[in-house]
Figure 1 (spheres, rainbow, N blue to C red):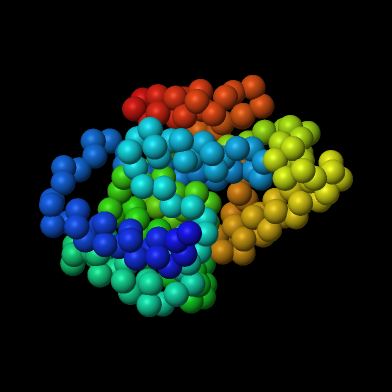
Figure 2: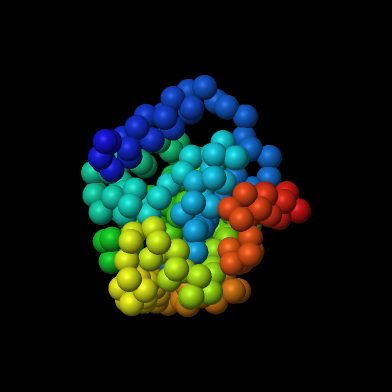
Length: 219
């Protein structure tokens, strides 16, 4: 299987190739951010949405790798021209001012990595606070949720866990995500005002969730 490092390098090479080809820009919204409650099916929704839109999918693990490595961050910046770099710097400065942040090295790299993805467009980004980084007018911000009992049942079935262990795992993951957003963006990950659309998968299939997002994007 490919390592995260290999996936990042492949993405960089893809961007460089597309820059040479000077492809037509996407009309309308070209980036979707997906925030999700654990067990809500958000990762699957993101994958299906990216496939449907023919966008690149950036999972949390890949974004984290981009932010962890200074060398990777440098490679990402090499895919932008001078105009793109200037726009990226404006985006980062705006986020810092808006949320009153004192960014450490990780957050600086994270904002640049997600900013680079935003500049290239044609992307679905999962987690890592992308909806707090990219300008709301340039992306469509989705949060995927479901009632706790449904999420526990899904996790229990998927990983063959007892209900008690599934509940502990969900609560731990949910707590970690809330703490991450609070620490780095001084925000509440569950606040509906931080999103353009909230999808409840309790009574909605993955296919309907994807169709709903696509419909809302064009609206």
